[in-house]
Image 1 (cartoon, rainbow, N blue to C red):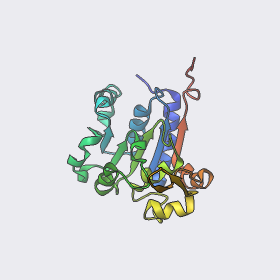
Image 2: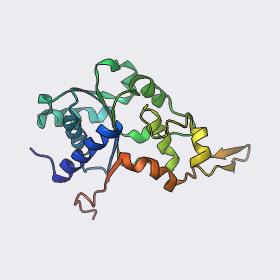
Image 3: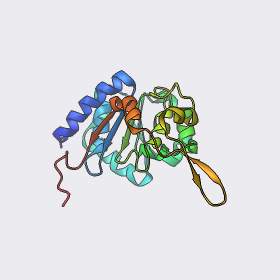
Image 4: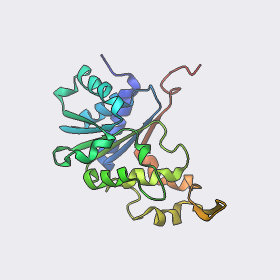
Length: 211
C-alpha cells in the first residue's frame, strides 16, 4: 500500500510548515485522504507519541490506516473521540492531530470544547484537518487558531478584540432585541495572517470526477 503522490507532496509541504510555525492546516475535501496525509506528516515531523482527536465513528478507520501503512514503526498513536478529550493526559504527547477543526469555529465566544483543548493541548504542535474550515463565515477561523499558543492571532486575546480589526461589525434586529453581528469578516486581511499555515486540496485537484 502506498500513498498517492499528492498526499506525499502535501505531507512534505506540511512538515515544513509545522517545523516553522508549530501549526499546519491541512484543508482537504472529503475522500482525498486527509488522515493518511496527516499520519505521513507526523512521521516526517519525527513525532514519537501522537494524539488524534476525531469523531467516534472515524476511530476504527484511522486506526486501520495507521496499521495498514506501517506507521507503528515510527510513532505511537492514540485515537480518541472529541467528546472524551477531557479525559486525556497531555504530558506524553509531542503532537496533536485535530480532525474536523471547524468544530471549534464558534464565535463570538469559544465553545466548551475549544476551551478544554486550549487548556490541555495548547502548547503542543498541531495539525488541523478540515474539508470545510469556514463554511459560514471567515470569523470562524479565530477560535480554530486560538486553541494554540502558536496562533497568528495571539496578540488579540479575545475574539472581540480581534473583531475590531478583522470584522465589519453590524447590528441585527431579532424582533425582541438588537444584537451585534460578527459574521462579515475581512477575508483578505485574515488571509494575510493565515495563508502561510494552510495547505488546501479539492477533489478536482486530486483528480476525482465530480460527475
